[in-house]
Length: 259
Ligand code: COA
Figure 1 (spheres, helix red, strand yellow):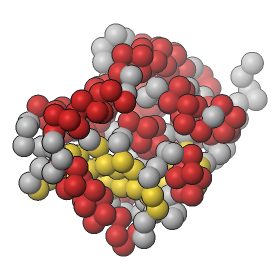
Figure 2 (figure 1 turned 120 degrees about the horizontal axis):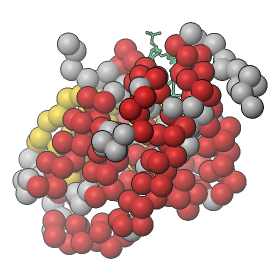
Figure 3 (figure 1 turned 90 degrees about the vertical axis):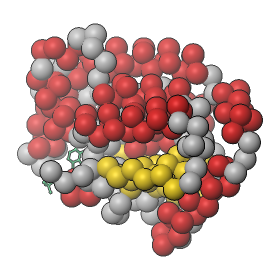
Figure 4 (figure 1 turned 60 degrees about the vertical axis):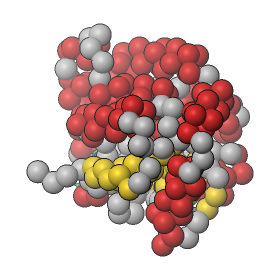
């Protein structure tokens, strides 16, 4: 089986690269587990002082694998209390005490955008498009984005992203404070490594404490839990099944059939 994630450590920097390019780096359960493992490792291995999240190909990530969504939707146990790999990854992001640098090119859909709200330094290419089309899939926002994105860009723009799937282009993302800078595509990975190397040369205890002070971990985890409960409910809805089926069949979903 092709490797969907490549993880490499160079000095103090752990670089995590999504490599499922044939599927636009859509994230599967297995990939979420690997991502969570990497973040947890970064927090417990003192030789790791910064993490870079990046992707191969022309798309940062198409978000959650919709085939996996469809399976969970059909699975009557979808509402079980057992933690899903995506929840584990989100929790690892929220709890992460290691600085995370994200390097984003092309589309960053769904969790591809919401994960950026938990990163500490975000570089974009000019063609980056951030989108969170949860309602179009009959779902609700996750990763505390219903609060964090709204805080960053304001209610009306966040609502348009969630409810209508409007995207945020690179310049707007930088202006809104969702990202630090736009860099040429050919330099994206190199510049991300440079930032991570600079961070890893800083005093680690001070960095960790600063990150912790800047992020409200407990309220964020509470928001994640509130969203997750609704997400699981929506995932099992007939509307969601229609959305996932329509994606597989490469057609527009028909939500008018549901009251
Ligand atoms: N889950 C599963 N497979 C996905 C996927 C996803 N989220 N996104 C893309 N793919 C697959 C496509 O089905 C296609 O597979 P195929 O070649 O076997 O038919 C392949 O990746 C290429 O995707 P394609 O749509 O042809 O690429 P594109 O460049 O035209 O468009 C996107 C790229 C990301 C805009 C588009 O794929 C898309 O909108 N994907 C869904 C995004 C989404 O709604 N994610 C969930 C968010 S909560």
